[in-house]
Structures are given as structure tokens and as C-alpha cells.
Amino acid sequence: MNVLFVCTGNTCRSAMAAALFNKIAVSKNLDVRIESAGLFALDGEPASNEAVIAMKKYDIDLLGHHAQTINTELIEKSDLILTMTNAHKMVLESAAKGKVYTLCEYAGLDGDIKDPYGGDVAEYEECAKKLWEALQKVADRIGNN
Image (cartoon, rainbow, N blue to C red; front, side):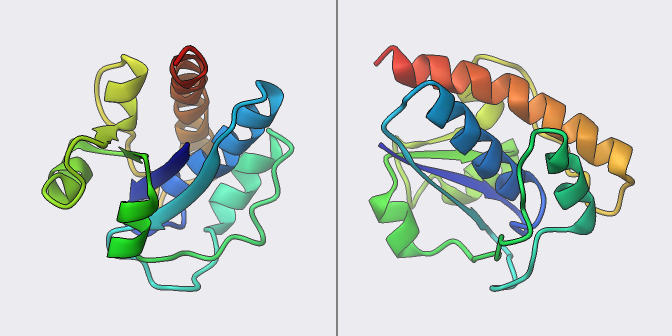
């Protein structure tokens, strides 16, 4: 299964979600390919410094991350697209009918994943914690299919 995580700039939430989900998928032996993209990403931008720091708590190195803008090819090759907010989902629904959900929706949780951009490391760590909790549920759902 090809899973795509989408946020706005692909330097914080979707980058962290993809890295965290990769760690979870490996530990649960899930057969998934994981990518991330942003609706308004600047191609090649690195992950934010705060995201890099927040991921260290999970023994994940985000220094090699390079942002990419979502495109038709990414949408078409994805089996599941998980967005950080309902607004992101609404932008993609017409192009990705039947395969786009908010991360929280797919995990059976309420709300959106709040953008930590511009915040301090504590806000990024809180975002990472919420992502980790939701992604555990996503992994369980995929593993049971």
C-alpha cells in the first residue's frame, strides 16, 4: 500500500508523520511505501529545525528530508492520502476521490493536526505526540485489512 501524508509546506507535520509512520510500519512489519508532500511546499526545503529536534525523541533523523509539492503523479500512485486538516482534505477530494481522509478521521479521532510552524520546540513535540497516537491507530487499521 502506498501512503501519502499531506500538509501545507511539507517541512513539519507531513514530514514528521511520514517519518513516524515509517518507524511504526517497520515495527509492525506493514507492507507500505510512505511519502509526504505539501499543498504549497517549496521543493527541496529542509524540515524545520524544531521538527528535526522533536523527532530526535523518537530516534528519527529528519535532516535528510526535502519538501515536495503534491502533484498528479503522487496522487495517482497513492492508495491512501492522509491530510493534516479538513481544509487540506477539501483541496484534494476532487483529484483523489475515495482515497483521501484526514489523519484523525482515518484513525477514528476528532479534529485536525494543528500546525506548529513558527512555534517553539514544545509545540512541535506536542504535534509529534498527537501524530504518534493517531499513527498507531492507522497502523492497526491497515494491519487488520
